[in-house]
Length: 270
Image (tube, rainbow, N blue to C red; front, side, top):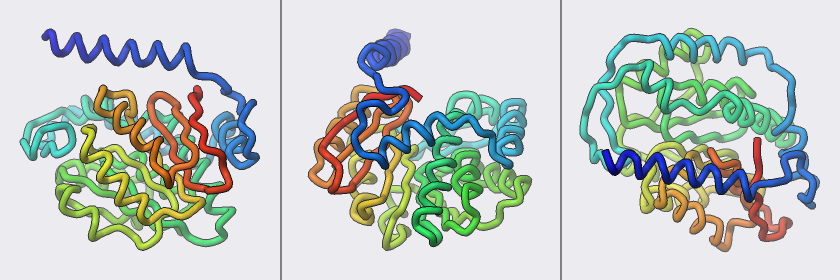
C-alpha cells in the first residue's frame, strides 16, 4: 500500500510541476514555422473529423465490456507473467485519451499531405486498437504496423478494427524485445511508443526507431512522467545528438530530428 501511495504522490507531483513550468499553449515563442503550425493549428484545431465518433463509440463499448482477457505482461516488469483483466478496466486505465489520439490523427493527416506518398507508421503497444485506428484512418493509404505481446488484446483490437472497417493494419505478435528489430520498415515516418515503461527497454526501442528516422520523422512517447525511470528515459532521449527538438505535453512527448531546428525542449499543454 505504501508503494501505491508513493506512486500516486509522485505522479501528482510531476503533474503539478508540469503545470507550473509548461507554457506556450498557443505556439507563441516557437520560432520554427513548422513546429509552430503543429502546436497552434494541429494541437488546437477544434474541427471534428468524419471517423472520430465511430472510434469513440468503440471506446464507450470497451468501457462497458464485462469480458475478462488474459494479458501477458512484458511491459512493466511483468516478465511475461499472465494475469486476467477486465476489458473495461483496460479501457479505463490504459487507452490513450481521445484528445491525444486525435492530435496524432491531425499530425498524420498533415504529414501525409506534405509527403504526397504513403507513410510508414509504427506503434509499440496495440492495446485495444483504438490508437491504431486513429493512426490508420488519418490516411488509409499509409502502412501501419503495430506490435503487441498479448494475443487476446490483439483479438479485441482486430474486432474493433473490423467494426470500423479497417482491414490494413499489420500486427506483429510477441515480446517486442524479440520482434521489433526484424519487423521495422526501412524508413520510419511516425512512431508511437506505449509498450514498456522501464528505462532500458524504452531507450532500446527508441534507438531502433531512431535508426530508421529521417529529418521529418516524429516519434511520440507515451507516459514520459509515469515514473522516475520514464522521466530519466525522456531526459536521456532529449540529450541525444540526433534529437533536435522535443515537446513535453505531460502525458506524452514528441521527438523531432530535423537538423534545421535549434536544440530546444518545450513544455506545453494540449
